[in-house]
Length: 294
Image (cartoon, rainbow, N blue to C red; front, side, top):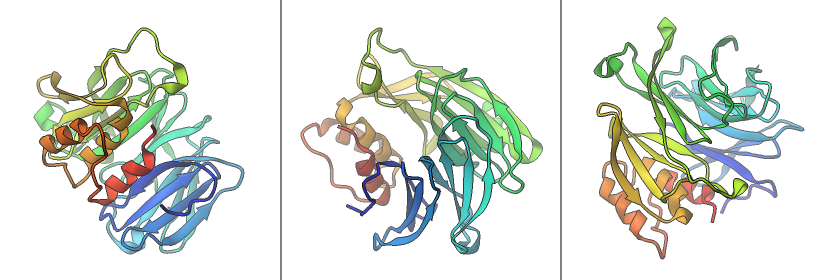
C-alpha cells in the first residue's frame, strides 16, 4: 500500500508506457508515482478543492508529458511533469468535474461535469470548443478515447470516444478534432431494476475492448450482476458474463489491463473466482485493487 494520507483516493490513472501512475484525492492533491519503485515522483497541490479525476496526455516524450485533473469547482488543471508546475487552468464547468480524458491524439481534452455536460477544450489555449448535452443531467462516470478509423462504421473520423452516465446509458462518438468533426455513432441503454438503494449503487462503467474497438464492455447496477459486451457493428449485446457484484470493479479494470486484454476467457476466469481475488500481474491490476469497493 502507498502512503496517500487520510483523504480518500478518488481516481488512479497510468501513463501510456505504464512507467508511472497518478492518483488524485479529496484534499486537492495529484501525486505521480513510479510503477517500478512505488516512490512518489512529484506532487501537485490545489488548496480548498477536491480532485475527482485525473488522466495522462498521450504524448510519449518526457518533456511533453502532462497530467490533467478535474476539480470540485469545475476547473481543469494541466500539470507538466518536467517543470513540476501547473501549465494551464481551464474552467469549462460550473459544477464538479467527474471524468476527464485526453483525446487519443491529444488534440483536445474531454471533461464531464456532475450535471452530465461534456466539454471539449483545447489544451493549447484553454478555450471550450464545444459542449455536448446528450446525457441530459445524468452524472458522467467514464470517458474513454481510442484511435480508430471510423469509416468502418460509416462515419468520418480517426478516433472513437465514449461517455458513460450514472443512468446506465453510454454514448459512442466518431471524431476528427483537427477538422472539428464529432458525430454520434451509437447510443446504448441498459435496463435497471425498479427499486434500488441510492448510494449503494456501483457506478456505471464502459470501455472499448483493447483488441477490438468494435466491442464495448459495460457494467453497472442492474437486474443481473454481469458484464455486457456490445457490438457496434451488429448493434446488439453479443455476450454476457455473470459475476459477483463485489468483484465487478476489479474485473472491469483487469479486463482493460495487459494481463488479460487479449483473452476474454481470462475475464471469465476472474468472474468465476468468487471466493478469492486473482493475483495482480500488471500495473492496471494494482489500480483495480486500489479502486475496489466491497
